[in-house]
Image (spheres, rainbow, N blue to C red):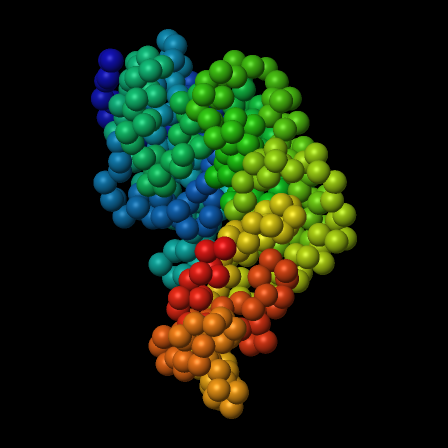
Length: 387
Ligand SMILES: [Zn+2]
């Protein structure tokens, strides 16, 4: 591991030969063409949010200390930015008039519009640069231990860095490209954004059955992503065919698992749609996320739905009705005690000795409203629940 500290390189040098491709977000060069600012293991440029971009320039104008920059020497006179890529891109974009910042009077100013002493101040700023000659594994180790440019690498970005190569380049062109026309469709079933690699992560997650690292390592030098793309599209196409309505909760499902389990089962999408709607209307369902799996499994596994218990007001109302009725008939206010010939046949239980029960099993699609509530003594309620 060889490292040299350079202190004489200025922002002007870095920006010399700077090219920024708005569409590709990559292959930006600087330092007289010797420096690749965005090597392929780097993440997409995510500073262009109008805030971080500006903060970088302001910190230079205010003489804030600048962070250490790491370059990796890849060849004689060839370098790649290891860290600081986001900030260097911000500086390059500013100097090439891609965005403006507010001056002390609150006026938006492009680089061309600011006073020449300020322009010079930016251009003549010297950077602290560590020039490294590291092996691939040293770089990977380093990536694992640092956060880049204040925005921590998320899991997939880290994997992209570690398994850089032709495969990941193709992956990013497909799944991390915000120009891809499919993004809107994917966004219905997957949460996140293309830029932060969320679609790519999910595609890899699905095809690898949760073994992303192994899969990326194995396919690292592949020159096609056919398997990944086909599997991802099969899952997405299947979901969008079976469920014709898009619901927000769909974004957090393990669709590959449902696809594997159910994609050979025929469904009627119109039926499915009305079932989804019915369950969405049921305010007693705690977690709507599970509705889809419940329906795919022919509405058998009611545990998936975590039906909400009846509230206290409902319990009290039902208790009063039931008790009044039971007293008139000289029976127990627990309907199950009343039909059994035991000592509790006529027992009137207190409210705190009883629990609410769904008269009809919830799986029969009965609404969980007052009509479906009955109070049972705790013993009978427990017995019924265990069935
Ligand atoms: Zn009872």
